[in-house]
Length: 123
Image (cartoon, rainbow, N blue to C red; front, side, top):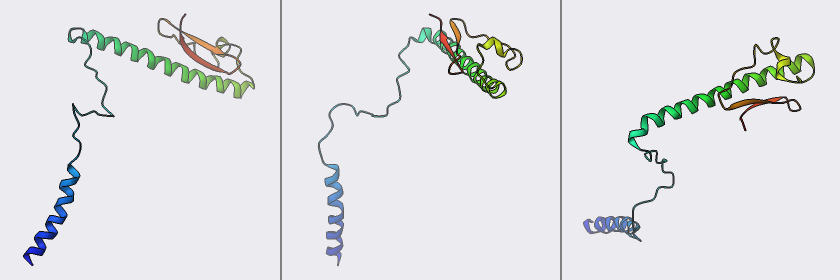
């Protein structure tokens, strides 16, 4: 009986050992979903780089917020007036309190045929 248990145990363990055997990978392991390497900058300029990134993120957030509420006001104008505004100034002050300021180096572009506003870099 003891011999049968040993044989069964050996039959169960041998496939596990063989599964681990195979071609070994040469070199370091490669990750397919590796995180980006953010440690490429100079540690001495890290504070300045960080502040620059914060300013760019703020500019992007301001652009997104301004565009979304202006586009909502354009839809409201169209629903009330039955047409799209000719320009953004036509919406002030009834639908739009004021035309918002955009970050330096950017401008608002209104497409009267589509009824949408975008913030783009100045040429």
